[in-house]
Image (tube, rainbow, N blue to C red; front, side, top):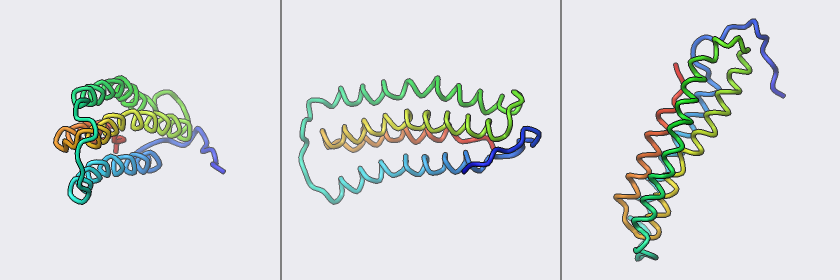
Length: 144
């Protein structure tokens, strides 16, 4: 059971709970490009549907757009969390919730990149979409 921390306790420094969630999400975002490279190296095959290449790339770019306003709201909550008078527990839970939702949405371009690779066998464009996810997840890094 999670124990509530009294509101009188100050919230200074980094919050390891949120930092750990971010670190695991960041490591996950690095796994997908490695999956593509390993698949390209060890699994021979031909493209399943090469005609959908522009559509999967467009889907990956469009799926990155919702991350931008979510990222701005996360940064705002990270800055204003201590000023609202909320307890440390409430602040951590709010940041963790925003982080999990934001990182989940930031993973969509990488998933579109993996789909693009398995449909077209074009690794460069797929790795670029995975790179977009790595950058987006990196921007969610909690303040230290």
